[in-house]
Length: 428
Image (cartoon, rainbow, N blue to C red; front, side, top):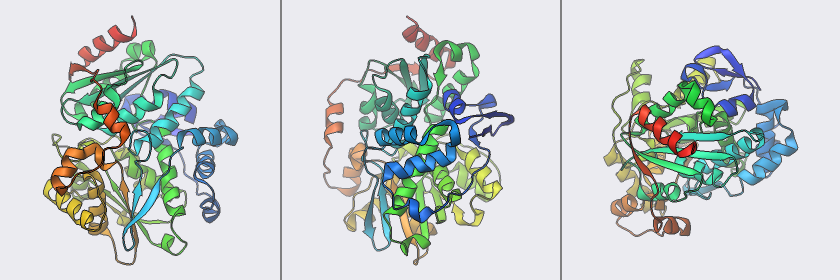
């Protein structure tokens, strides 16, 4: 597999090198040089999830990993379901929260951990990542107690839910967490600065586990095929997929699935009030504003890292521009949608409600609509209960985490402070 740095096309690397490198030169993200359609999509959709996922990833990655190794990796990474639930007639929710940290990022985090374990060959590895909510927990649990791997997680202090925070800040051992005074974009900027510091990078063997990392992105492609596998043949002909979008990795994975031949007719990348991409599509001007806090905090991103990948695919014609939508949803409307869906007998949290709104804004009556549930409602229990005025059950994993003390350290949004803190902790 050849991957090109989208900011420096002279840097072309293999899948293994891209996974180990994380971020390319000039803070560029890696993306496949070409995407070739799969053969026999219908046949693939009859296969079990892990077997099908291995075939998809083998097609993408090529000869760098044998099929039997990929099958084993997928069986270990994807050992929980992605369920498609009919909420209303012809509107389905793809539940991606049945993994250990109750969020869609378990798929990418666990597959990345399998890749790093296979590729590191005893070399020191330090995973440095920023989280706007769910990445931290997924990455922390995927790498927890893995020999030879340390994980450093940056999150914006006070800007993620307590349940999200406790799922990763309570683990300790090889998981090191810092509560940054600032926004998610500040955390992400610190990660990017670290990858420009060659000495720091080499000393710690830095890698990133954000959706910057190609292994996480390709893993996410697989659950779109799983969603279609749960539809009948007639329903697959006109499918509209709506993805709640912050860093735009999840909708990028959907677009890759479409480029491989999955018959996605229409894509909605719906955002909250952090609307950089919707405004860009309207005006042609890339003008990120200051990040605004919202009840859909995992999407509080003004400078999405994966947008260059999405834009590259649109420019190359991998997905029709006229079938790609990105609109923003207000806080008030998000809450209204949560109530609307609850009346249909289904409980959503804010991110999932925003995805449902994408179906309403952009869909057609004859289409089969799929909207993504990226997190369990209990991860946003306070918000959900306040909006819906009803109690929701707390899963055992969350209840246990909430009882544990937070082990995170405070940190200013300053690269020198980050470097000093991490070196002091990891080079003792």
